[in-house]
Length: 483
Image (cartoon, rainbow, N blue to C red; front, side, top):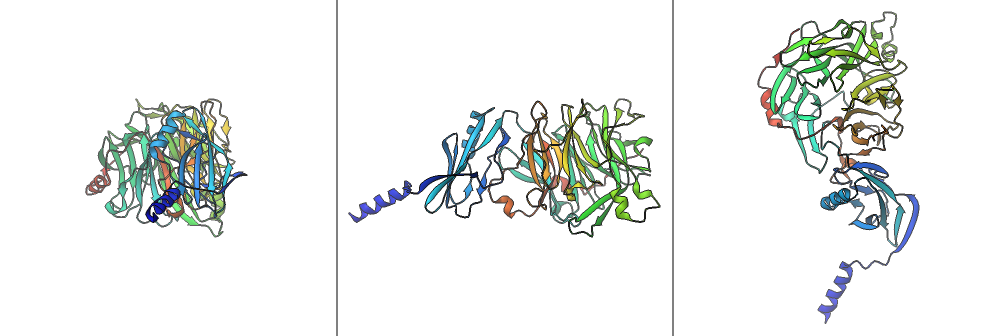
């Protein structure tokens, strides 16, 4: 008899006899990350989150009135199969989400929010650099790729295999994993070119240039890149509100023919009185977009370096390029005014929109809190301030998805220190929607992760090489370029 009573009591506990009173709270659900009222792609991984409620003992999530997740503690982790079915069944619809927190004596249901599911998929792979937030010192860097449809992650360039060198700027051609390039710096380093998994080590520099290639973009023909050669100087701010400043004392823009290993130049893009940087091609390859500023550091009447650096305000320009004849145009067109400084122009694959960052001065927006994203309509020249996207911290380093419906950017909005990748939907009217941070398998991930995501790039597939392949490449000498 006692044994029967024991099992009956156990059954009651297991079936969740819960006498806590249900109440509603007219306040937003205290969840992190903030996934409230966001627009998401149909192929995104589950938006797992924490409930920031100190009294939370249990949590339930209902979607359109049906319980999707019920957990002990304050972590919400969705079953990936249930999640995928939920999104597939609600393409083009707005889902109502309610979060209820089980406290000691009651269940508190917070104000519902929504997820809008778009059938426009985001490119499913993301590459980025992981780095400590103090960029003046680096160690144990990694270039990593992540599948956005689940939580698969791997390193494709690792400090252990390249002698703990600096590495950065992995960029695709047309978001294709079959053609991409990245830099590994330091003695014996160079540009690592990936063509269908075959790697080449390149020294993209010629005699008379101020330095090797730094920022670059692919031409749609896959044969040419446009790049800047920069002489970069780091400096530290005396004011505690700012940390590190990086600026160019010289910079020029060139074209490189990757097949012939030759460099093409124009006096308009290599003027010592001006600084030219951050070049990129238009999707049709007919224009080079770049940023330029008069070199205030050359002014002999300015003894204050800080004043000279604050005078570096870059404008956005474009100039024609003929890939067949490998000729650069003779006249540049200016698209913005020099009241602020423009960096990192990136044209949407459909050629209609251009994203850039705007800051008070200079070319190192990552440590400028005032840095915001801007989007210009290339047909009307109208600039969108993207108020729904920007925060009061640095928002920068952006790239497009191949369908021009999504872009990713790095934001420090959480704490001003650590950059994280955020995704933003741009609808067919060119309107941007509230962004959301990259989801993680474990909801507390961002609370415990001590590296910044830097220079995120969206790609259509996984890269066809491994970190070991990159390591083997550095046993060879880099291939030279000439004018």
